[in-house]
Image: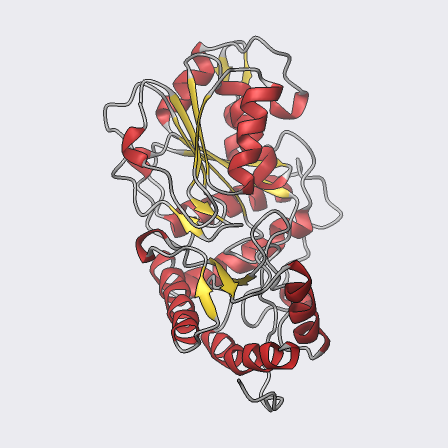
Length: 374
């Protein structure tokens, strides 16, 4: 049995939540620009800061000019549902689910929009057989399953000659992996994940085929005002130039600008990926050294490098609650219990805003909590 001696060194920043995630290193409220606060988002300064935020996202993501970026309400959920409500219905739909958020899109497609979708599922920790996907359909999937720790390994399974659109919920993937933008027609994310920004805002990325769908297809159902991306059959281009559909929080915008400028200082996407990779490798080493700890996603090729889900031998939900509670009480790790719908386990964020030294310092604390409860 592991010795229950309490470690002496705590992680300097014990914020390992998978959303909202750790703030960028060096962040403090005093470093946030405040000139736009209290001003209209439609004033010159507001529109300029929103456009600057979009430009920074494009630069860091290395997004081609073929794709548009819009800031929309409702976090990643709002962005993905905006895409579903405005673009689905033109073709048959396939929905993929291997964790809770994918199941949410299944529910939307089947029960809310009543599209009678083809549903392809896999259990937590696994991917379905992606080779069975028919690309005459529109296809909805999560690139990186935040609640299962399972991701698609690449975009090779997405057909170049697809007739349907690819809809990627990419909220735990952008800024952490190389994404093949030529394979992605629609992508959504929230900047409160890999960038550590504040929650409440979503980002919608549209490729040219998605724009074509918007301008050629009128859905059979009513669209709420906050979902409307076209007017008179044409894309409302202002949405993708900082003219948001509803009033954004300029404080949240300034906060994510700080994170994006931090990302640039690291070398952009390559720097962010390197930090995520180092964090995931440090956590892998912790898992490999302990026979009571294992990855929920057994296959390394489809294992998340950001939202890493772990199984604890013999643990039920009550054990995990006590385990996470012990570490929170000690200030050693916050918010590491697995998602409520997932199998009982731990979930440790390894995205770029986490410092590798803090992941390494976490290992002895996991031992202490496990031994204390055993």
